[in-house]
Image 1: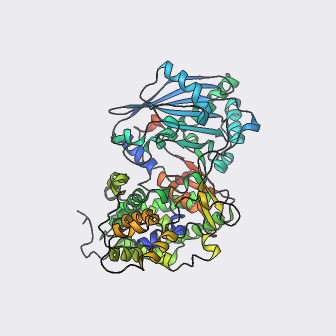
Image 2: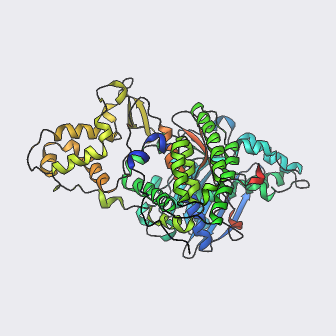
Image 3: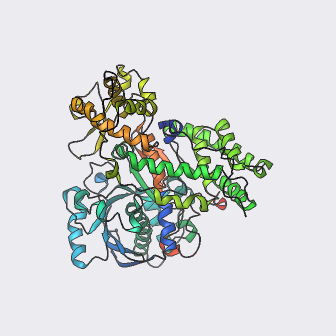
Length: 565
């Protein structure tokens, strides 16, 4: 039997100072712990079933449908509405007021009364109201050129052009997937104790997964109604190549700052998984073969990954070279020595770009489900458990914590304009996070506490004036403005991956790094930044459809197969 870990304990977890840098976080890739993959594994293990009790659309795609996912204890239904959207009203921006399709994830099986109520409200989104029977509200737009091409091809009796599919990868993209009480939906706390929804963003991932099925059914229906005598369905292999697109902007970015305990749990689970793999004394022939195969598939994937953003184009160039070097390493005899995974990881630290290093982390986890998958159970968080400030902590101890966690921030010149060039605020119109230019707009009265580094440095300056045995309670009586950063410091003292170790308001900060980090944990692929503030991604591309979950491996889909090259 293979020894579980190397007994010499020569491997350690990566230090937060290394992991929690924005450049590295902005290079994360999906992995076995990503939420899409944990969702599909759970649904397969628990023998979920799926049906479509309603599908009523005209030839233009206007109508309604219901897709129901049935688990061991509960059912969840995606109620879908298709609309005839004029081209001039189609926009991916959050300020849009109309969409090609709108959705609600209903808790259970909706009645006709429920569907009519939702039909009156869901299409209006912010202007409508949903109820505590709904968990998620979402909307999506067609990727018009590819959508029409697929419909027209199928109607004419042939499959759509593979090159056009590969260029986009989806025929519909969501522009929002709202939950956690927004617009009247059920509060997260009311459903958090359900096993199937206990993990992060499981309801959101289920919604997107069902939307993917809806999009394929819709184009096949529109082809069939357009030309009943000649229309064909999508080939099974071709269907898998369609994911669900997503356009995500600044509204998502502050999440990593606002939820320190949750982010710690996400990052720590990934780092623990890496530690466990690196600590293996040996690798089996099967594990080596799996790694070699997945590395070859990652080479295929990077060739299919397209972006027009200069930074991402540059990173993709590095990643292609990195994967070529990694493939050569994997083919060598070095894979059969002692602690081969750790040797490979250390080689990667010296020879690969940060983008390549983080791709390697994801690949290292793949051959070891027995070490990795169980860690998904620790990725949720009860954030109320760390909200209370411990007033009995001594200022001496707090000072040591600040020096340890925010040492980088104590070296920043916070009087320099470039260090404080940005300011986070909430927009009046949509109540969404925004990032403005501090010295060009009147923003400081509305600034949100999204600059922990700057605030920690200010805290440290005021602490230095206190002597003796003073406690935090004494200090905060005189400096209540520091309460929020004291709380963050106390959280980071116990949860080391809770804090980003970079300046989140500097002139050079890239919000897309925050976006990519979060979306990688979702399981997104093919990140395509359209500016430094918003990005397009693909979700569930190559994943099995609901009717295929019981037929094979529900987890071997995150990288394209070799025959797709």
